[in-house]
Length: 201
Image (tube, rainbow, N blue to C red):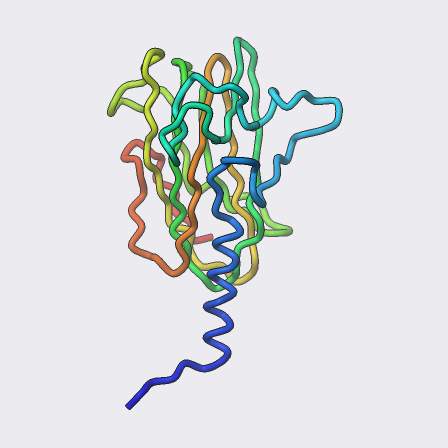
């Protein structure tokens, strides 16, 4: 006997796939559907998340190539913070969010976090790392490494967004290959040094 899915379930599955594809980004040419929240006309791009030009700091993760694309937040002895926000994610669907990040130059004040944002509610931080906690391998000015990260985003009753918040003082954060896997609940919190924050609000 052949089982048939209802048109409603098929439509829901297609929507979840479309939403996750819109939120995925390799940063090869632009920020895809992500938005830089703190960019203004009188603020230079270098003060926010941006795509580096003539990159020689680290090979991009997607193609392992010089000059490849990734999101980049840099500061030299001045405190900078910047946020990028995802397109809206579907309600009633858990996601496994995976991405690659790298720290470039040692900086005890550098911090990277991910928050869930639902309209009319306070942000809920679901993932947070301080650079000084990265020890496997240790941070190196000479050879920055891409590190794999993932976090489970619990199902929510309404649409929401994800915000990635970077803080630097005398260093850089790099981000690449953001991917959302709908309905994947086997999603271990990584890396091991990440602050365990429950997303059950």
